[in-house]
Image 1 (cartoon, rainbow, N blue to C red):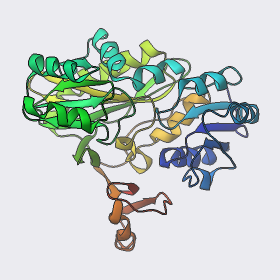
Image 2 (cartoon, rainbow, N blue to C red; image 1 turned 90 degrees about the vertical axis):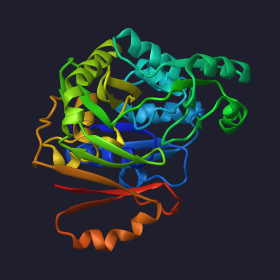
Image 3 (tube, one colour; image 1 turned 180 degrees about the vertical axis):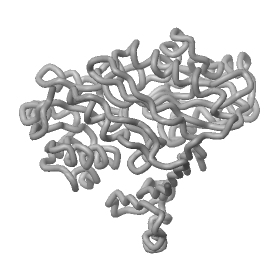
Length: 352
């Protein structure tokens, strides 16, 4: 057990790290952030910051020596960096969760082995492979890079076989997978936290709506079209967490289809679709992640209101802060980012 007063290391300095740091501070922990960027939303609320490359072994060693336990806020980290830190201080979740989530082929195979149903897919390593995959899966379909894709990045949609060359060029000719198109009614996610002792808690399943591949809103409770799938999807998520011996929050995204819940992707960390839990649950995803990595009992995931809605503030939406603060029902979260870009997550707002 890592007791309050200790220092938690967080690898990655974005808004997820920021909200983890705030949750940790409320429980009496110090936070030390490690990330290379000049602007670090998490660094604004941390006790210490190390700005260095993930390949800087001396900086990683110094960071590991200064903290009592380490976690990470995103999965696009070189596993060699995690392994180096883990040789010196406990790291949760483990590198196994990271390795599976980083590679779409490994992720699909892992989930399929546990009884999950992703969209039909094929590995693609060349334009010739893509042509063969299209012949197998048909169109429409979606080409996705095997690694480093998020928020719709590293993806290209194919409507006809003639789109193959353009799609391959659009993702930079990187190793990829082709996924058959899924006809779905709704998108949803399962968020759980698993403790070091194997205890698992889950939150209410949110209905997620996207714009341009980026999450726009998450709402609980989910409509009946999603609720009918929640038990099967949650059971799969728990099997994944247990097979990985995952510690911390784990998120699986799904499509609701007539054939059942179709697995989309997983994230071995706190997740945008769980931001509503800060005000909408007794213990938020951030609090329970901190509890898990520190070996503490997990908190209640009970809802605090009959209905909860979270909306992302993307790009210029951040200028609505005055109007949102005038709404006494709204809970506003701004991430402290100075540069506004289309689709960039600048904050979020939650209504109970």
